[in-house]
Length: 110
Image 1 (spheres, rainbow, N blue to C red):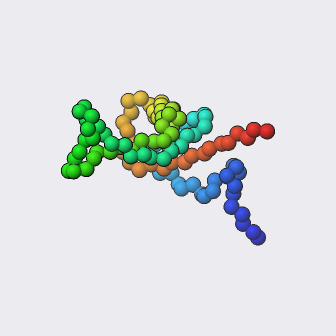
Image 2: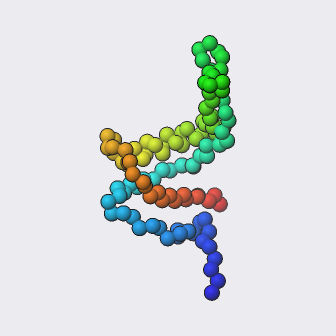
Image 3: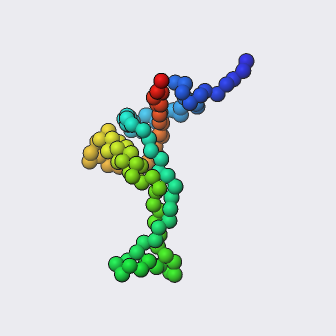
């Protein structure tokens, strides 16, 4: 008997899901749209009001900028807003390990 791994488009998980702890809160939501990647990171120097790079211990202070920031920001804001609404405004943040399961559905164009 030959075993073939499932493809990305079959409606079956690639691995058996782990058993959920009954005490773990369950949260489920759907986000429509096309997921966006964050893109490559570029190191950018932080500048002070005087226009010079900020230095700490002889090194320039930097931050990472995403190359796909415009599209990924909209996507991340949508995920954040949907998850917050599903969890409930004002509820405390989750401060324990979580189990995350995701499904992405691709629409084919004929």
